[in-house]
Image 1 (cartoon, rainbow, N blue to C red):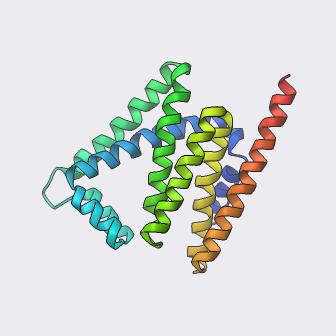
Image 2 (tube, rainbow, N blue to C red):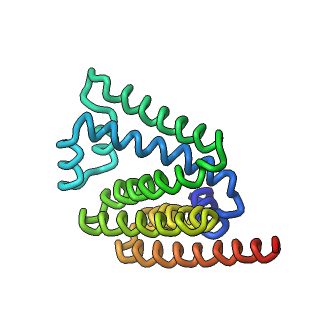
Length: 205
């Protein structure tokens, strides 16, 4: 719990200071999550729609990734995640010119998938879709203008969501507390990291 709080606060407010680590995590996670989502959807698209429509528990979501007993679904999903992670990681590292466009495409999608999949555990589908779409649009727009700010926004949004989930689930707080805490932490984190980026840019001039 304490370690989770410390990590959540760090990446919410100071994630930009670990720029290289963020690029590493973003490239590995973005490629892997998008590939995994595609793999699961291809194998059992009706099952994915049913879970999203009816809601699910963590165990049911995990069972979707495992697939039916005796099938190759688990192996296919693991290979898909690993291949997607490594391909995007090595493409981004092979050429600095590719890092920004690749992460600018995959990171907003993976962030939206993460937000949707996490929030649907305890929120209605409509609310989960709205938050996921909001995260996708915000991260995509920012990535078009500033790569450093894009990393900061992505870090603040995802870390703030994880931190808010940790706090509200641990103390069994109402959903409105989660919404409020997530919005407040994400905004404060974005503004704090934005000021850090501006200060660094001013010092470089």
